[in-house]
Image (cartoon, rainbow, N blue to C red; front, side):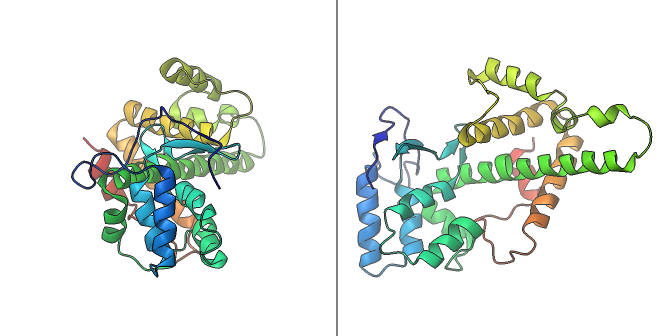
Length: 259
């Protein structure tokens, strides 16, 4: 599958200068090399990770679909890039293993986190952690607060409480969705319409994460992070073999984002 339109002027991202020679290979070359490695006997997952490490485009359009791998210019969705690359190797990668990776987060090999980081490279792995904390944990926090509001509403069987009208956005970020969307437009120039494309919503979610980090005190940041981590763990409790490529916990969050 060849790209109908690639973002030629998009900035490259990838390994740092100490990990790769200047100028990462073109996408077509990366795909060809991945296929050759698999056909030569390399495990498809290792070849995939190496291809991800060599990839340079943060966004591209293939077959009319936009693939935005770098969310908010800082957070790397490596599984989206994995999906894109595996489409190019559909004839040589086992469908069951591919689907388990993309839809269940199950790795076909039990690679240590250090090996995963090495294959992606330091720059992409750091951006991967931004996606884990700034998108996945943030989404879990939002879901947890939505559930809290619904539970409180059901518990107040009689009478009206002003909190009945409080939205998740107001409780977590201190403003309504419309107010946040207006601030988002002022800061980024991106307009959120009534119907938002999923890549745009991920960008907005990551922006909300950065906003929360700016406006909340440390105790509130820690409390909300614990809530998001707990909800994410609950969501995945039955998927014991799921791999994230990094441990997600409060200590890791504080070491990365704490002052």
